[in-house]
Structures are given as structure tokens and as C-alpha cells.
Length: 361
Image (cartoon, rainbow, N blue to C red; front, side, top):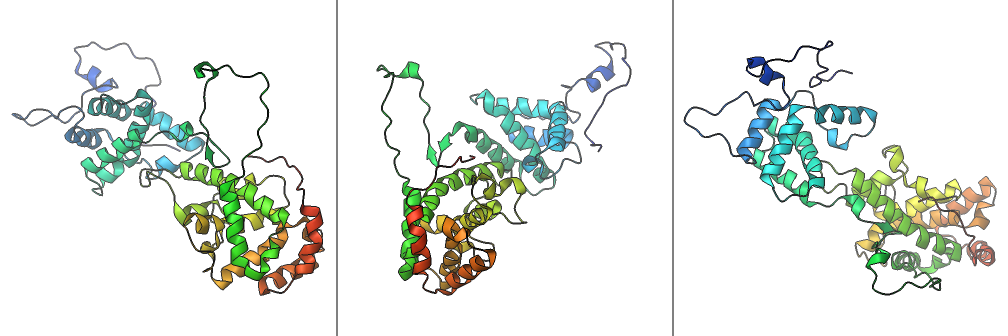
């Protein structure tokens, strides 16, 4: 695939040109821009909006994909490598450093790439150069996502032992892990919403929801980080973010949340996905969304509660051991709201101590 901005250079080595030759400036990467200021007018100040507009008008090549910032893969990497060697990248780097002299150097590349990926908006008159300058500045102020270390939904502060003022014990006693307030809140929300059918939330189901709620939050943070683009500086959010992580055909295969749900049976993975993220037909059935948005567990629509009852049997190993026909019948009866206390009571003794599992995060 050929790109209009690609310049492979001459096939044979040419002799060096004289510095006084008019063609030497045209061949150098840092050549002056062709368009000059009108006679009697000063040139635009370095780092100004006018300077940015001139760079885009004179050096922006044709054919840059509009969704370049959100693209992934080998082809996107090759496009960025070609752009990094172009006069446009060098001119925008100088412009960024002149516009924000105090900017950290590790953010300059991100700002330049943001300007290149969104420059077509200015070229097509959809944005003003001042708006593009504001977007580039915001990209420089936003911290990198990799600087935020999270584990099970909580921010982890990395501390060096050299910075600790006290001596570290050789063998510190292992403190019991604090229970997840998010997962426990989701379990309580579900029990209150089920009403008389709260017995369906067996100890095994409660443990899985509590455990995988934090893993789901970490995965959603990763999907949001991948969705950052010039059009969406903050990435996906709300129900759109949940839809991007569901295991459906609309979602990207690498974003499907079932891939991070450990070594559990496939029906359990799908049930956890529907309970935590909702479905395309009923996005409001997401327990994460309802709990974090402060929705009352007493005012849940009847069809949403029916969906939750239908998915809870798949969180019980005793029910998964049923034949396929009996399991489908149990699911249908749960959706209708039949009394299945005896079925779930028979599963309770085996669910008190959930087995340890190797979770892939």
C-alpha cells in the first residue's frame, strides 16, 4: 500500500550539493516553508496559532487516515514511522516546544502525534487552528495512562524501599485482604433487587460477583485507554464503554471481557458479563452501571430483574452439572420467577468454600 506522503528517496547515492545551490534547501528535511509572509508583514511568531496554520497549510500531506490516532497494528505503525521522518513532524515538534517551553519532553511526542492526527479537521474547515491548539495542549496536560497503577480496581502507590524512613521487617505477617467495597455493594444491590428470590445469590455466586467486579473495572479502564483519540480525548465512557467490552459481534475481539474472566466455564463467563455489563438489548441491566450511578435497587424494571434471575443459575457449579436440557429449563423457570429454593438449597453446601483459581488479569 502506497502513501502519498512517503518519500523513499533516490535509488542511487548522489554527490553532495553545494550549500549555495537553490536545490539544497528543497532537499533538506528542515527546509524553510515555501509560503513566505507578505512584504511588510512580520513572520508569524514561533508557537503561535498563525504558525500552526501555516505548517498545516504547507506541510500536511494528503491521504492521512482520519482515524489514525485510534488505529492499531502493523500498518498503523508503518504510517507513524513514515510521518516521524517527514518535515511535518519536525516542524510540529519545534512548534510545540516554542508554544510550551516548560512542557515535559516525554509529552512532546504525544502532542505532536495529536496535532498530526487531528490536522485534517483544520484542513477541512471543521475546526479552527485555535481549537486544535487547545486539543494539543490538553494532550500535553493529561498524564499517561501507564503512570496509573491499578490492581483489582484500586490505585496502587509504588514506594521505593530507599525512600522509607523506617527499617523494613524481614518477615512481615500477612494481613488479611480487605474485602472489596465495590463487589460487596453490587452483591447487596442484587439481593435487594431480587426481593423474595434473593436465595438465588448463593455464596458461590456472591463470591464470583465480588471477585470479578474489580477485574471488570480494570478491564474497562484498559478499554477506555485504548479508545482515546483526537475526537474523544477522554475515551469512551458510560454505557458506550460497557458496550465496547461485551462479548458481542459489535465489540472488538481484543476488548471482550470474557478473555479476562479466568478459568471458569463459558456459560459462567457469559453470565458474569451480562450481570456486570448488561446486554445490547437491555444496557440498563448492568450491575456496575446501576450501582456506580446511584440507582435504587428498589426501582429496577421487571424485565431487568428477570434477566438477572436467568443468569444466576450459571454461577452455581451444581446447576452447571445438570444436563443441557435441565439447565435450560432451570434458566427458563428462573426468568419466569418460579420458586426454585430446593434447587439452590441443594447447591449451597458445596459453595461455602469456593475453590482457588488461577485468574488471568
